[in-house]
Length: 117
Length: 112
Image 1: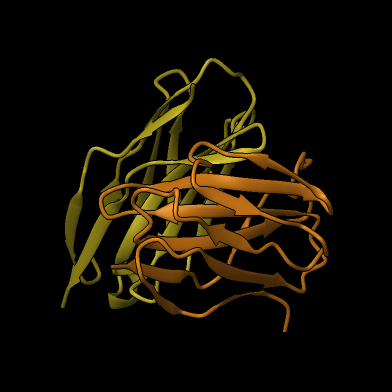
Image 2 (image 1 turned 180 degrees about the vertical axis):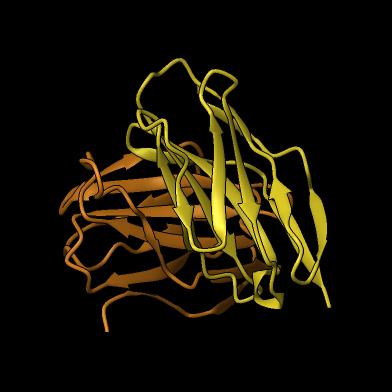
């Protein structure tokens, strides 16, 4: 079955440590995205990637980094510079970034809950 | 910048009844997409319905329909014959260029 996988579902880290969240898709989508979700707020865009070896900052990129070495994979690293990293992180993908009519739907993974203490 | 506002933090509906969730947005663009996503307790985001701004006809997907008022920048979601499985957080979203801009969400509770 095609879809997006994120692992692990729950992640715990000590403050000051970097941590990498995994996102893999087998939908053959070009575009991938990372969102952060906090209580009482909608999803906020961290980074997005249109194609392999290319990515752009979203609205809240500070303290995060990404890579896109393979079409299927878009890992997110939460660095020690992120001041409030505890949150729920969602990865998504779509067929293409500049989507034409009917191809703009983003498919979401199940998410990773990161807790930093 | 585009913004999306959901003014109802929480709503309740009796099973089999109808409920309407509100959403307003702010944009200067003339062509765009609007979405309603559902996030059940599993936290998996599920697309419920989509509306293209250039279409005057309101989108409908089974028990879900929208009331799209472009001039008023309003995009409400109506759920008919509510079911227990409809209980979730609902997010309204606006597609702006390369990204989706989400509202803060409305928690929908369904009473049996």
